[in-house]
View (cartoon, rainbow, N blue to C red):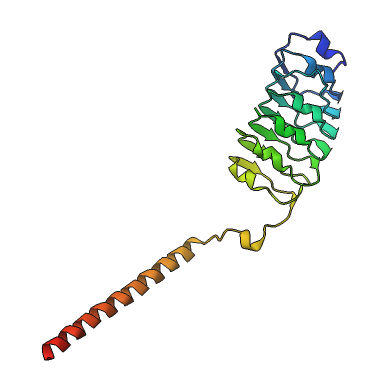
Length: 212
């Protein structure tokens, strides 16, 4: 992709370059196209870092760069894409920690960063984004504890990481169907024994009153 691509296509609204044999770095000038709302560069062999310049477009709603060879760290300037609703970067070789600035993408509803090489502690603040419905962090090297805020996300995939197990006392007790049935039958049996005992006691009391 030419370095000056953005300046040559200044009125572009939708750009779909997916499923090609494109290679080399992604020119930052693409993100300077003010009118661009849709960008799909997935299923190529693009390499290097995903660099978003300071003059990047805030109109971009959809960004799919999955299944490439992108590497390096995610830059903080990705947060300049303030209108972004969908960000899909899965199946690359992106490393390092997630920038805290990602949590400022308030319009984000879909985030897939799976199958990369992200490390360090889990980015707790990202799940605080209101309206975030789908998050996939699986297949990375995140460590530490899974934040409770992930429970508020409709779908949050976290498998194949290095999370610490939850404390035994804080783990919910999960009973099988057979266990629940056994407890119910046991409680019913105890109630029947008490009822039979009560009826028997009343009968004996009535007999004693008659004898008197």
